[in-house]
Amino acid sequence: MVESAGGGPGDGTAEVLDRPLPDGVRRRVVGIVSDGFGRLTVTELPTQLRQYARFAPNRRVKFAGNAMAAALETDTLFRQRIGEKFRETQPELAGALDSGAAPPAADPLDVAAAAYVLRPAGWVKLVSAAGEEAQRADAERADEESRAELERLRVELDHAREHTRAETERLRAELESAKREAESLHRKLRSALSDVRRGEAALRKTQSEMDIVRAEAQLQVSAAESESRRLKARLGEAEAALEATRKAAREGRSVEDMRVRLLLDTLLDATQGLRRELALPPVSVRPAETVDAVEPGRMTPKDIAARALSEHDPAILDQLLALPQAHLVVDGYNVTKTGYPQMPLEKQRLRLLGQLSALAAQTGAEVTCVFDGAELAAPVLLAPPRGVRVLFSKPGVTADELIRQLVRAEPPGRPVIVASTDREVADGVARAGARPVASAMLLKRLS
Image (tube, rainbow, N blue to C red):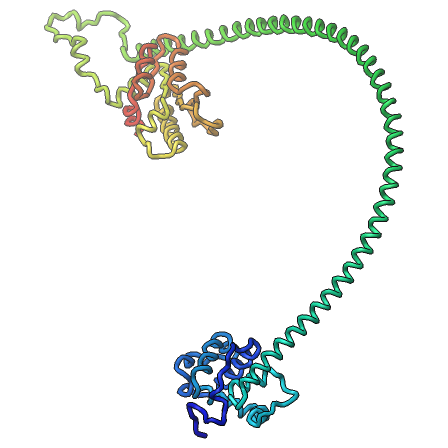
């Protein structure tokens, strides 16, 4: 079959539709084009439609419907090709349209769409008639729907009226019952109000009598409480005075006994030490002293001082600890933070206490290590090593003050050595009679 771009005078290609296609006809036309679209080669398609060649029919209708309708209207060759494909699939309808008589049982929309694609003679009338038929069918359908909706609304109105009538009767009956109940309640309320007024009068009388009794009882209770407080105060004062007397007697006796005993032990040890150090002969003059000779010059105190040890020599600490009844008081954190500040506080304490225990075993001196406990949230759990007394300061009291208290507690004459680099602590204990030594000296001795 040879395709042509135009028709002869006998076909309907010269006819022109003077109005837009009805929506129903247009949808059927797009469907015909989509069906024939898939059976054409890419070269047979218009350029603007080739991008939709691989689309499925449903997607082609959805995305290329307008483009296919426009191409069918403007491209006569494309329309003829679609018409040929339609003739192959719908030969009966196409033949009927070519003969000028549409099948009586055919859908007017299908007839109009086929006529629009095939363009037989009189196709414009067929399309217009299909549009009018579709509009008439839509109008009839809308009229039927309106009549059905009107009938439904009438039925609902009748139901609503009947329901309103029944509801009105029920509410009227309830109103009558409520009125009767309200009248009964009013009578009961008036009776209750009368009873309440009588009860209130009796209550006021009772309250007045109770107020009188309560006032008298309150006076008696106040007098009794005042006397009880006075007696308790006197009893508390007496107990406090008695306890203070007992405590003063007990503490005074025990502290003084301890101080005297410790001082006595110090004097005895010092005497024994002098006897051993001096090694005094049983007689005051030796035979050699009667020989006439030239004696060497004696050393003055200045010469002895020149031969003394350096202030930073750990041997000084050994000499001090060798004194009778020597007491070494150590400012714990001052020493540990001078010697090994990078360690945690717990490990600092354990290391220092272990070294002090060894020092106490070597020298036999009394050793007390003081730590600052003012900032501790809870007491430190610690097993003190042998020969070392471990003390933490109380809340509100610094370790420096606790050290000064320990020095003041010692009897005058007992050798007390305080190891601390704190200048304030050193000056304070020196004024109290103790001998301060630097923390570095103790660390050298311990190492």
